[in-house]
Length: 229
Image 1: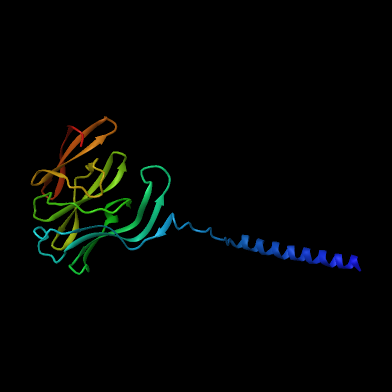
Image 2: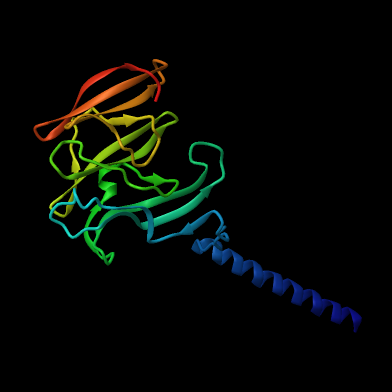
């Protein structure tokens, strides 16, 4: 009797093992995988998120009802980078949009910022710095991105007739600066020109660039050694 009972128990154990093994094999063949648990402290969806905002100067805003300029991440991710390096800490990446808002903060006009850059990453919120760089009476502003430990590259934008657009610059002449800020107020040399200062690693020196508005574009008209920022 004991031998029969032992045989029954052994058969049941083998049957259970066979069923379990067959189920696991079917899952592997179908490609189904159990997803790893996400670490919410490292990667979290944050949409939409306002990263920059500034009121518009009423004396320069012209014929528009816009009262504010904001930069919004409309789709993307917020991540805390823990690896040592230039991007350690908070990181916002994704799709970004410039928006002109009225006094009730309703959008009047938008411009997709990603169209001006190969890639966008912001590590903190900031405020816009406004000027009139080409002496046409309209509000201009710069937005920059990290390029190296000593360098940010910038694009210029303007607000004209209630809409935003890029201010062109001659090809192969990027606007560069070592001020390392997402929006910089460049020093103006004349009503239609401004200068930047950046550190050239290959030369081990600071260089000053002067850009001037000619016809419908900014041109690099001078580059020379200078003191530090």
